[in-house]
Length: 155
Image (cartoon, rainbow, N blue to C red; front, side):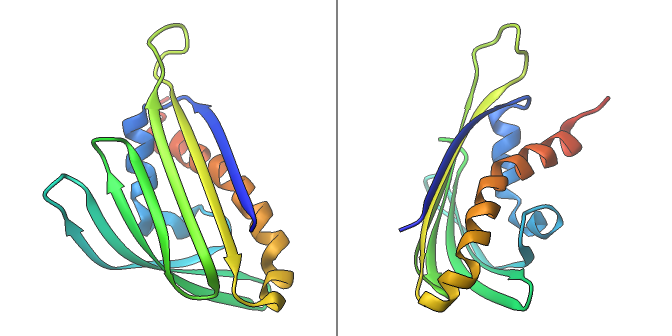
């Protein structure tokens, strides 16, 4: 099963990065391969988490696929988890964790940890999209960091 995991130090607070990743409706503006994203529903939980059901359409060349995920936003623990519900995958799990760095020379920085593992249902689709997904997932953290720079930089 393909997997990708990365940890990055970014020049924004963990709270800012959490908010940016939680803003799923804006993904088509900057996330690699993301053509469309719509939220079917949102539900606030008693524990402070929020659960979203989201449809994401990805495209590369002539291939266009839509899949559905259940996204749990956990602001108290600065964590976001997405699990697969329906679409071209047999499995997809994605997790983001954010933590602030100690104050010091680095200023307002945080650690962003991103991991994803997935498996396509179709061997043909895996062959067509597999390497492109691998490259796109490797660029996800960079795309979110660049988006944070654009959104949060005031100078």
